[in-house]
Image (tube, rainbow, N blue to C red; front, side, top):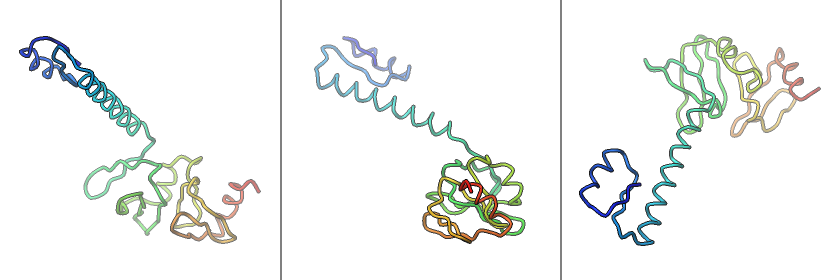
Length: 156
């Protein structure tokens, strides 16, 4: 924030990417507005850093590399040579990749394969029944081959 008694320095202040410019004498309301602008800029910068620090993976889809934040994955569905990644707040991402390759890419402490066609984030599990896992908004089957891993997840 630049403060001065001369208007002619305003342009210079904004050229240096100042958040605000205060002309003397400074009134309390105008000072409070400048402080709020600084707080807003700081919070925006923190949000950008937090978003960039979230663990993520990159997949090729629609001729580009897409960044998918791991926390946003609802579940991953295998479709022969392709996988469909269901993501919060957007349409599913389709990519040419095997489910096995995706399983090896994902952190084992955050994701579990429950079926030959499904990988799910552990933290999204709502309930586990004998042959089914309930996630928010969907039930997915547990494959016979994967039941021991699911039981181990439960500590049994």
